Length: 348
Image (tube, rainbow, N blue to C red; front, side, top):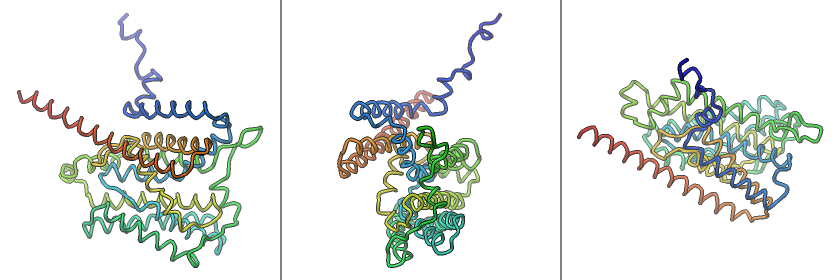
């Protein structure tokens, strides 16, 4: 009997399967999350309460949706700073439709559509006017924020009293018997993240996104229409930002034109870089971003439970963004050195 017939297949090894799915580069995120959970749990007995854990899941859904779209944008080599303001516009228009027209599905659809349209505007500015993505979306960050206040009557939040719509943001399923229930918004995020992971890892579109981020010139020579891809990418990012805005409306029962001033884009960008993406593009995964979103949400929840003031939380998130970008730059520099050594060894 051959030795290969009695050795366990590596594909049947659960640990290797998990490592392959998560990515070896993201194991450090899991370790950091475990250590953070242990630290918080040692300081407060309320952390592992089922309701608190489900609240974490509900709270991370908005940033998680933004993170899925932002991952695609950053992997392509661009950046979308306007997603928080897009969420603000979507929040207002969805609230208006639900309140004045009485249609929940219409409110959701219009919110997502508004986000997609604003994403198309971003792409048009970047491709046709040849404005750098950072500068373009920095400009639309301000413009869309103003648009949200212009649309809202007298610039004020719009109350939404529809219980069916509120269920989307704060409803739970499987609730009962002492179990607080799984947030609907968390289930929605899991579905969107799973679709995003499949698209980025197993489709032609996903491979094209990685190609244009890793080497735009080579991607163009390979027949990839970079301008068309930018429209697809920013439309997806805008639509997911619109959906995030709809969730904000459903959860707070009001259209919030100020959604774009709450640092949502900063949290999404931080999560993507913490998840392994680099500023130059070509690297990053949806799985890594979701792990980072959970880490950030756990950190915020822990600091709230411990009574740490909000401004300290802002400092911590800003510090994490700097660390994440620095780690990404270090990884890129190390990879370039490795490639240079390999090329030198081949040449010699």
